[in-house]
Length: 125
Image (cartoon, rainbow, N blue to C red; front, side, top):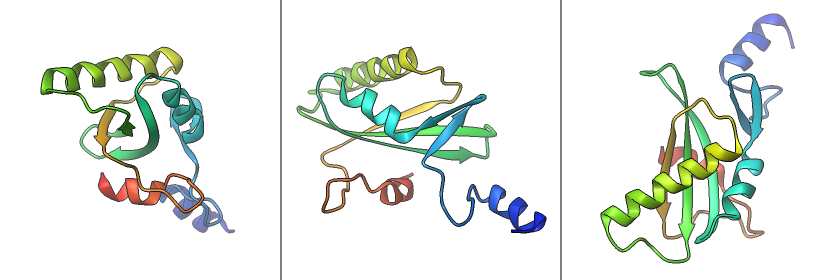
């Protein structure tokens, strides 16, 4: 790859045609797998998928966390409390400098082999 191609690839968050499997928070690279593994240890979470997206308004990345739960929160107050607990739990395990957006779904999109389809999650943003 030449210099111009590298600059364009970096601009599109790609390197040699491969999308990175994670995001950067400050100077720390964090893989989606690390974050999803920590989330799966939290009570009530059956499935977890994470994607990062760049926000033009805030000039930073926003971390979108998609969760499928054993049992859905019963009301809006319980839902909000659960979301805040999950955000606190993630921030206690990782030094994140980006906003976290938690979304609860009935089921996350997966391949036949049971891997999260992050490309589908990224389109939901």
